[in-house]
Length: 97
Image (tube, rainbow, N blue to C red):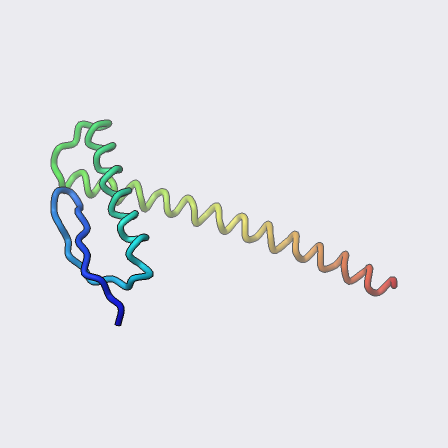
């Protein structure tokens, strides 16, 4: 096992964890982005309670995730439709030759 022992700081608390080497960079980035969003919410909305901050950031993050998922589903459907049309065109060219 190539696990690393790291600490991620969230809301002024350190959270020790063991992670795969391949996941370290992604998890550290997630920790930095979370800290940044917490700071933004604290400054923008004047929220001081850490539990309220974490709840609001979790809620905003979930809303963002659902939006991206919905957009991705639309993009996937559009791409599938375009590929089907391209396949039809290519099939027509191959049959005509």
